[in-house]
Image 1 (tube, rainbow, N blue to C red):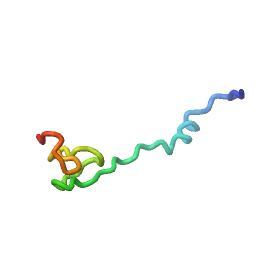
Image 2: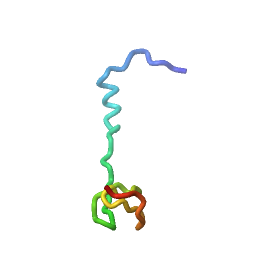
Image 3: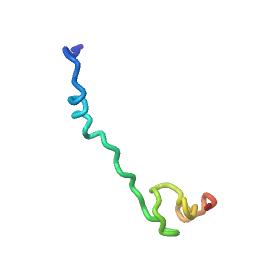
Image 4: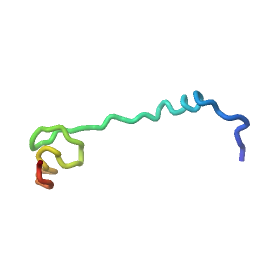
Amino acid sequence: MALPKRRQSKSRGRKRRTHYKSKLVSTTKCPQCNAIKMPHHACPDCGYYRGRPVISAS
């Protein structure tokens, strides 16, 4: 198996990693209370998920 002859510089390695960015978290509107929430999660404001109360709202 081939091995690198010289060590790659920090800038060269960082250039390769320019696309390793974290994406923005997608959000949706809660149909119950219209608050912003993460998709496929219970609403932190009203505690509803898919039309049913699943957690007690604080």
